[in-house]
Length: 454
Image: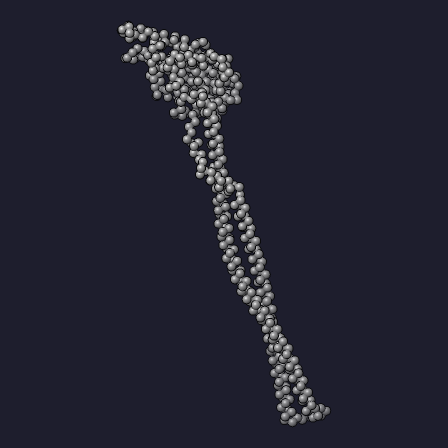
């Protein structure tokens, strides 16, 4: 449901009708009695009073209301203390001759896209407001009521003379705005007219889906016409500032969320980096151990090669020794062991043969032991070398994978730091230190739109 404004403005201070001259000025303005490109006499509606002079209507009211009390007052006074003309007398005092009430329903924004024909629907509504005002304030004698359709918003100017009785000093009946419009009574009148207007607009199609905004205290203020443009510019500035504030709050919220995510990611990156550093140290330590084991394996392989050479040398020695012994035996006993049924050896040859056989057997056993040791050493060295190579390949693969992961994390981290949202947030935080939007909160935009009533 859209809401529009309602304003009830009672003239006071600079706009008070305190002299005859001011009455004449208001008469010219309300009745469009002078040529001006800003106004159009054809677009006003006079629903009460003369179309020539509001001052004449006020004079008539003064004669009807105050001639009898004035005659009674002068009858008991010396000639030098008598009041010849009560209107002239009030005009020269500090009292108001009359008062002006301006009522407006809807502001310039509401009426900006409405035609003159649309605006004329306000005639019966403002007429009803006038009649209800007469009912609420019978002491206010209406001199003039004019509706202006040639300005930004349709509104009605009501000029009346507030009459009060029961005075002990001066005339028994006097013009008195302060007695007729006390603070409490003025508030009651505004509330009643506000409620009446809200009911009346419900019957007009142009106000479909629209209600009058509730009355706010402290809004009955004078806004001179020269300040109207500044007022609307101020309203636009306030609106723009609120939009900018909402936009900045959203950007701040988004940036804060992004910053929280970035902070969490940064902490994870930091933890991952520390883990990678620790892992890298562990891998380096293990690689050093593997290098030492590799060197040991190389030494074992070299030892195996040496043993293999030694075994080959022993094997050759055994063969040479055996051949030499056999040859010697063959030379010494050949004659006695070949082509005979029995072998006959002397003691020395027998002992030599036994020793040769024993030496050959020992050489063969030593060769077998050396061969077995060589095989064992070679097998262990081969197994150790294969395991070292497998471990080295595994560590190298893990190290490469960890390095790739670290680089990926660092790249993501740098990308997040280069995010425009983070940059804008940091710029915003910097600008907020020298500029504050709190000024917009201190601006009190009036709820009325009567600045053009001058």
